[in-house]
Amino acid sequence: NLPRKILPPADKERVWLKIQNHIRQQRQQSQNGFQVSKLWPMFRVGKITAATLAAVLAIIVIGGATKASEGSLPGDTLYSVKKVAEKVERVFASSEEAKVKVGIKHAKRRLQEVKSLVAGNKEKEIVTETLEALKTATEQVISTAEASEPELINHAVELVTQEAEVLNTMKNQVAEGDVKQALQEAILASQE
Image (tube, rainbow, N blue to C red; front, side, top):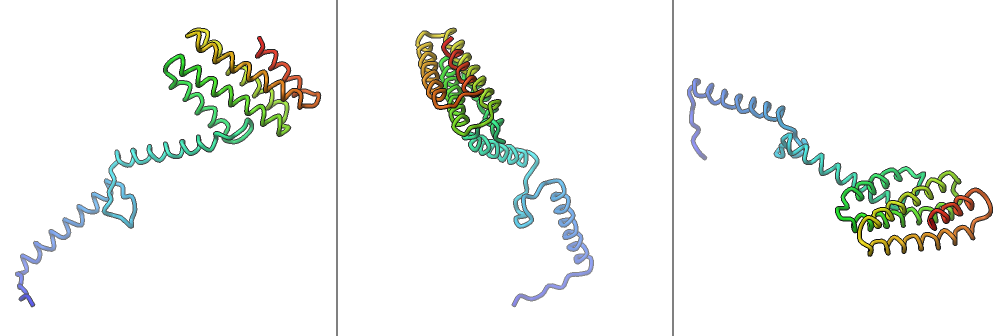
């Protein structure tokens, strides 16, 4: 019901130029910025925000892969992710006590892996490599414990005792062969 205002041609041209300028500015901004979705053009994301979003997404994916790799065994696809996560965990252990506890945790994982591999009748090479990794993890725990508090040595002794018991049990359950010999060698190394 409002009356129409009749614009002179010069004013019409001025309004049309403003509309064109506005459209040009919008096009230029959309070329400079990154739009998350065409459905939501109101969300324009700058380069910093896009990089932050990518970093968060990468952390989520890496965390998921790490969580998924926890139950993996040597020879599995995700086992290398598990080993990398353990190295990172070892690096972030700040005190000697934390290093010993992390080392014990990793040695117990290797022991559990050996149990699973022997129970699953896996190849001798995989079992031998895992026993070698168990030996290395145990040696790291012992050397770290010896260099620090006497209380930590008790933790290392408990670990070695537990390893010897489990390895003896497995040795008695395995038939004669290469795996039994590798288990015997691991028992002797843990006793040393």
